[in-house]
Image (cartoon, rainbow, N blue to C red; front, top):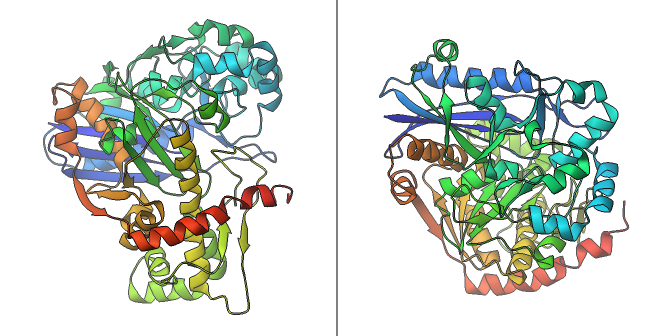
Length: 498
């Protein structure tokens, strides 16, 4: 039997069919676009996302000719909720996590609850990006939409619901609303009361990997799937990627290397301390019952390389086209071999953890008349890695120690970059055979729910294959530790530059 994993991202969705042994059988990707009708507003059209999901399912179902799909699991990014009516149709666009709305509502909730109490319930301080603040904004500013809303569903919930599932929300996505009790695993009436909301306005909380229904006959026929496909609650994309990379014990973390970067380590119990919260590290449930995870992330990673490619690398683009190679790999391979003579602060779209400063700016320091393109590229690669080193250092002070990183995503395809990361971080970096761990993770959950796997150990053994490991050079690591001490001063030194 085969398994279908679907991952809903902020700019596109992926569908992957795998067999029980981890062989990739079919995959498809479809883009969609953010909508910004006013400065600072960032929205997704749920109907556009739904149509894109239907297209990728049709693509993989149409090209795949093996054993029938047995179960579907869905993951998605967090925070963004979709108000739907009783017919299950969206009532408006969804505000995503980088939308600026919710600041006043966060301040109001902070007065009502307080950060300390919110931390003890939800695993995080109160922040505008979370769903509860966005819903309260709708209640205050779009009352006609709020009053017509039957349920607020997150994107993975919504896709499963449209396919035929019950209105349910798994624990990992529920934890991204700031309305969920991460210890009791239920909607927090205290948090909801403060916003004037009810648990009935949300999906039923369920453990990731729970069966939540079977596909509707009309949808199965429309998408080219069997009639008895099981629908399975997946989870937050980063938690699913952690499972898909085999992060099922403390000491391991998945390192998602894409447009942004996110480190997701696992630990056995929630860490509800000021050291975690002061650095904006939330404690949230893993997709596995007895583990928790946190997210240490950046708003920029591969996007800084893209910025350089689009604005300053016409020669690299032409050469890559002539040679028939990936332009990013060409840029990385042409980077200066030694540590860069420049330092890059990669806050080109603001700073995420540990600062959570949307107004932060990036910088390139140490420029001279001798600076060459390879120096800038190497500085970018080092800067995005220094930022993650800073996050790992802060995590360790809070009691979360990472010994090995499992690299996934687009930049994980570059052996040169992974070796640089190992040298800089002083840690083992391992790349997986299938770099898209998110869809692998939800496929594993679907397999456990449908009986393809007996337990998570069997699922990991079937799906997760390590390809190659990169080990740090002690000499280079020592050199980079010196430069890291310089890097750690940049944010505060440039903080007033807005």
